[in-house]
Length: 422
Image (cartoon, rainbow, N blue to C red; front, side, top):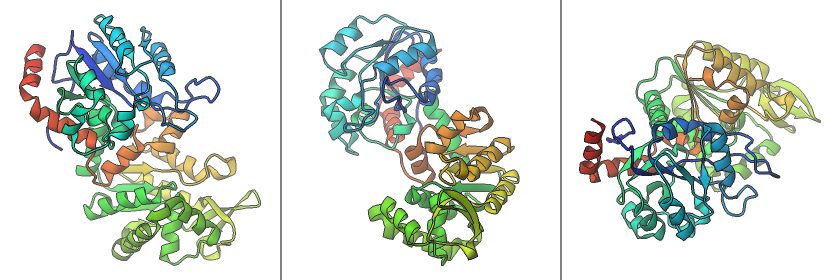
């Protein structure tokens, strides 16, 4: 990664700051109250560092067509509760109402703009040519009233919409505290993991996990990859265990057009790295609503696979206890059902008790850890599922690339802000 500037590098007191966060959260379907405010809590350190600025917050909530696609007025209220400070909301993004509200701001004020995905340019203008995004009204208008742009939306860092990468050539772009924490934690795992390093990859987004596995095996990042959930089921099927048409059809539907490529990648992983892949020795089937654990060799494949088996779970727990670094992504089964949450819960609890450096890759696993109150027992719980997996898979994140480019382009301006810090 190239050089990027952080809040510790600059002095922003008295400035007008645009802060992009990812406040996208599960909301109650009736009153839009927050069912999980983890992502809002995660950016509080950044907001506190900007307490002597005019702070304008940009975020999104869901996307058009979904039931939870709403205004961000509830986000302003939730921030007000969490911060114990007034957080104003304006039902506008870059129009006259927003500008009037910004003009009325004083140092120390916080203003939440409306859901940025209610802006057509934000939805439609997606290009890797960040410089051309300056031509949007979204960027032209908002950059005209701000001194700097702070990006703390790691969970959106793999996107290239105007609110993430559009300010690259328009304003000095600074990384927020959460963004830096995410980058540092994930890069430490990728570049210098404490040995032995193991990855536990599960869930039903099999293609994402396979990309992560390929990168880690190629670069010798991990000694062992333990597969669980849907990932394990497809690995088993490719390795010669007939998981049955009911389970195969489910995975085919989930993968869609990615089916053939994912199967080919798994075949090659098993061909060249079989000694590093730990497959389940047993699985839990849903037999008429009841949990039945069966050895792989005796699998009744006309039933759906709903969890990792007890013996496989115990083997995984043993590997966790002896690991120096653990990357955990995705549940081991249908943890929402009491009879089938054993594998997922046991793995999470083993990670919480481990002395290893544990990184959890966002998504369902991160939400479950938060709901269990185990965040403080896990070294790093990522706020970004897709962005985290993209980075672990060796991909380049647009949001981070934008920060690197801006650091070079606005070098003199940033040096001035550094001098003001002194």
